[in-house]
Image (cartoon, rainbow, N blue to C red):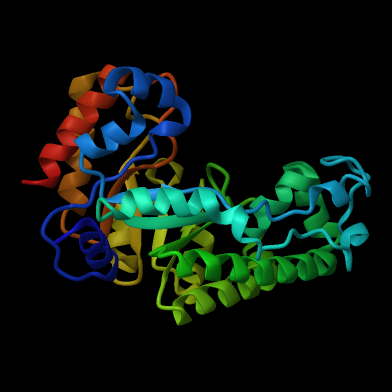
Length: 323
């Protein structure tokens, strides 16, 4: 099996030859990784990462226009001011995808499974309104946000089409919904104005023969059944530290979707003494090995993690994935 075959089989619950490996390692430690291994790519090759997380493409927003409406993240920028305005960028300019194309070529040469990130509805508009204002606007302007989310779904579908045409194996929608112990809004509101537009994107991606995944930090248990209804193939992370136990996943959802994660950046890697970190990584492997699980960090490894601890963790992960 090459990496793409291995990852796809794990996602779909089919037999595979070893546990697929990945990690969100470069966001905060790129310089340190480069100093130690020569480049981030060299580390990815050393540990035979099976997956590539690709960023890039056009900014969803037409920011020069939005800047003429009201200051970003101010209470003066309200959803009603953006209706029927050209707030989204052109998703069809080939030059905007050159960075994705180059990254895809590098990773496909190594047989890796490539997923491309795009912002989800709540996360995307947090960048305009600020999260506190956005939460307030969900109560004050639900109909207006519903329309803006609808327009974003149309933009996302066109973005996804270009990525799939370039060879993307999965479209990854990043849409943080959870706080540490609960959703940041009600499940009813989620079902009313996020679910329908997300569902349209997922269905289109699937119709193109591509997989679709979600990243959401925090506790999303109250919409876990809704995630099943969306038809998502992968969820990152299934966050144990936010009250989402692996037992619950294995009992209720392991036949519905795969999980990307398992190596916690919130309390384990870069924080635990090495004997405890080893025990923690072995515990997770004991629970999830052979399941619909892609080994990965639960988020970007933080810069308090030393290169020595990172190397220790991935030496162990590399070994356990092959046992």
